[in-house]
Length: 456
Image (cartoon, rainbow, N blue to C red; front, side, top):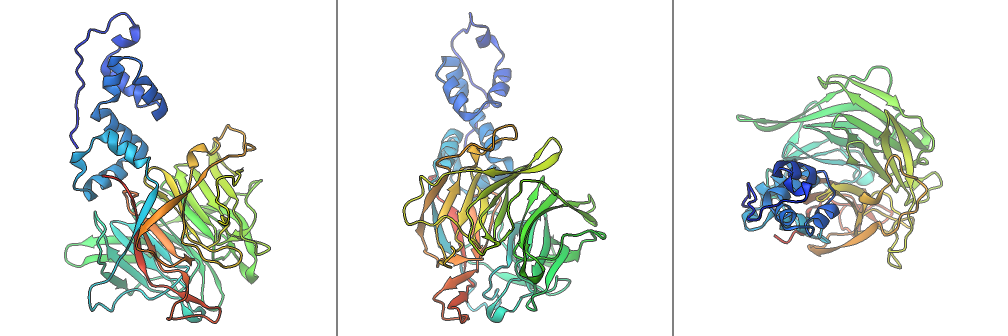
């Protein structure tokens, strides 16, 4: 993509003071404006039209709104970027309305790959997929860690390798979040029904001689930790803290508490503290927490105390130094008839363009889903706005093309740095020949990629 480093003008702009402002100043001011204001500014005069059409400006806007890491990853993964302007890229990103699924396979004859499972963890960190644990047929837990190198582009064939030492004990229903180049794992349930509340740090190492290695170590958190649990939700906030909510505690009780883990700079110690605030989301399990900004986290769905499947939305944000929960009220006017939005065991992932992509899960009748929904987070209330306003048309269903995976729940997803490629592994599915439970459910071992369709 060719950059325009300057914008030239053939007309002498005199008369209006604003037209005499140096171009660098105008450029800086424009970058502070929302995109609608920039487009409106472009029709006011020839000078502003020239500035707001420059490739330099739109490259800066792409990095501002998509993130520098995302833009750099897109550049590395797409060979034909130079054929498009930055303005066209920006517009294409925000016009995405579909995904394309690709089935990924393993090298021919390679028998060393993860077995079928659900309620595991799957993360993208240091250019690698990292998979840990989960539950398999017979209600047994798994304690294996698998690593597959991805790099800058998604390969059609993946080669996994296992990690055999220093791993956490077997479990399912745990959480594992990315925090920079580290993974932070918490909790889970083993096949004896015991709930865990230990915290682990995982790290990928690229070694010239040994290739890619991965190591776990238990984090020292002192005497204070959240009560043991599994099937809770977690995410990273501020790139240095982890928040968890809810889950299934001792004696099968669903929890509704919120805890924050502060990691030390050395990554050797951590401090847990509970965020006891009201109002807050009711107790639940199988829900999702997703960071949608440095200090904002969205909670969606799950299964409540009465075993009901939920579809409420809650926003956790930092306000003047303290955390608070805000319920996001919305109507269902744009949800098609016959479509059930409430779900448990789904995934919710931030993808390209700052969108929250909800995939799969199951409803109260245990009907598993294979649908993709986008949640419009741009209309969510700010810290100072009223939380009583009912939002409309915040859900949009995306079309899916290409490979058609089975409907599933309690699978796991992760996204690469570009935000364009989403990896999905495992889960509970219907109609499998292998490892079918008496309930008719089966555990899946399929790995597939969901690509956001960008017309480049």
